[in-house]
Length: 84
Image (cartoon, rainbow, N blue to C red; front, side, top):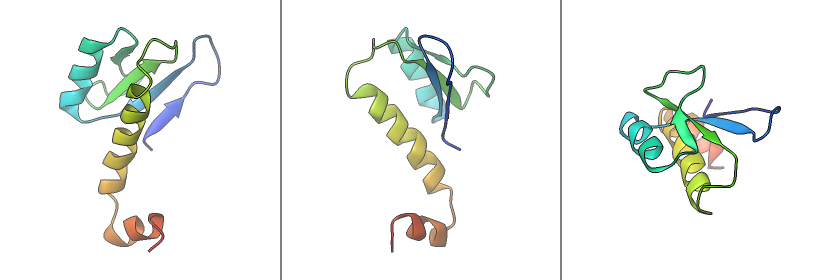
């Protein structure tokens, strides 16, 4: 699992797994990013979907989260995901 999305509330939020160093970096740079809500705060961040992040930053965070999980998969599973 690389992301958890809240389906209720306004603004919504998404929890994203991340490298522990970035887990400290992104909240320091953005008010919309905070330690993971109901998650291991060393490996997860919560991102408020309030529109305050620059256009490319949320996709970058999502891609980073996804790649962390894919990199931990067995080689055969990674190849299957990549259609090889």
